[in-house]
Length: 278
Image (cartoon, rainbow, N blue to C red):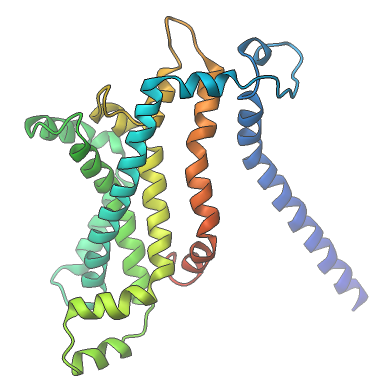
């Protein structure tokens, strides 16, 4: 018995140590970027690494840059609108796939998974040609549609799986009472699905906020987002401005972190209550 307790303690210690090691590995880049954002460019390339909060010049430079402010505004507009549109489409689509007898439903789900696994480079050129023909390049409408298309496969699959885990009894009772499917979704399904909806919403917001490749291809100088602008600091007059790139990365990471912390309760519940049911 004592030997079993010792083995359990050793197991707990090893698991705790592994968790701390993994968290440290994941947190260190953000920590170093944050520290570096308060340092001069020359200090970043010194032979002796050091931690010094010596200046706010990088933040002042960014917030005095009208192009950076414009990119911040664009991201602040595009990410929430993309999240709302993704939730709207994926909610009704997922409910239909979960509750209604649709011919070829299995094939449709496989197609959704296929598009999620498909490399983005496989369809970025056709989408570019299509959007160019529709005059949607460099517009908010085009970027919102593109970001939504990127988020929809995963969102539909996750919400469909979450809806599958909900009991059908309440819906049957509502149908007997004469409720429409729209009433069932808005009055019964949505309140019960808040954890799953928040989980999908966080993923959609983060995906739209951090998207680089499609934002780079489908935007112009007036509609570029924060990731595109930050990459632009990589080459300014032939000089790589590492300090500004790191500072911009820190600023960009703040909204997703705040949202994840604010809705962590729903996120954790969504992750464990069906949103990731395999």
